Image (cartoon, rainbow, N blue to C red; front, side):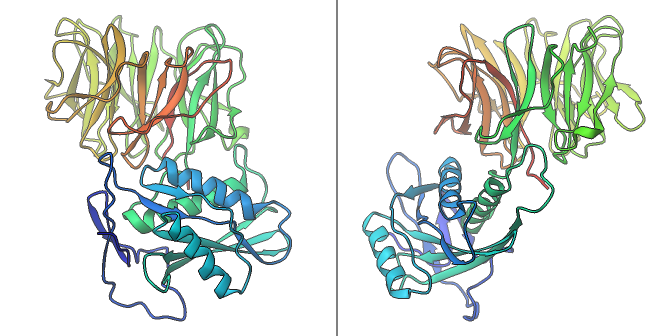
Length: 453
């Protein structure tokens, strides 16, 4: 059975689509929505087939080529979301022609589409007004489900690292994901990662899909372990720019603020992890002779030592509540994942019998992903309670250094499966892997930003 109306049962989740940012089509009043279900079988996945034809220019001149660019970028975003399959088609929708629109939707229905997204563009000087309309293509009359309006301006001062046209498309895609899943998509995010050979590694920032890469360090030194702050404004990282592994902070979209020193103690200053409120960093310091985990209050510089053990303790990662920290220690004889309370108390071992590093706590709080070394390196997942340990990658080179997207469904990671290290993304179940960096230089240590303000 396959039919769609206003509420969607989708990938096992039923949600109403009359959510927040989307408005019911005017002038029709919002009505109590009938239940709508998508039952798509095959491969164990359930996806909504969506058609996004070229947008229609209602008024003004499309000098930026948005009519084609937005459907292309947003369509790729929806595909990468893992929740949609974009139905291909080359139909161009004329303005103010309902009969032609109905015929175009009929063509897409024949190609398997469940839903249609039609964009209307109005250009007023440097300002672009975009209206996106969603249609139920399984209804006999191709019923209009909802509308959403977006505004953007090419006249705004440019922000480093942003292309306003692509960001407009990302916002549209994210709101379509919200419409049908109840949660914003992750297209309007960034990734930072490390580029370069040993001896000269710089940190770069790009759109989450790898497009628009730009460097944010240019010091010619080794720069490592970039980590986004919770407000998506700054990145903490370790750098040898002064000859030692010190911890710094930079503002990729506010380059005039320069680079701030966070920790420059004797020895190692590494493995930064932001607390959920952005006020503190958990990090590894060896200033007292042994690598231990501390918490640094960013504003005051105050330090709190959390671990006191003869073994190595490193690589902290905060829980989303800020009440617990997972970390790596060899106190059990080999590198294992442990969890402790925020103040360093109540330490308990999470993993056993293996070499486990790089824990990363899910934004949804239900999973910790880590790297397991067993011949090669692969990504594994486990609950914070230590149950349901399972591999996410296997059989394709080395796979390391996962970073969560803000939806808790996607992961970025580094892999050498193509012959050199590149950054990939995949769903939490290990499926639908996509390479998002390429080129002769190696790309490692991805960090996925929160949703952008």
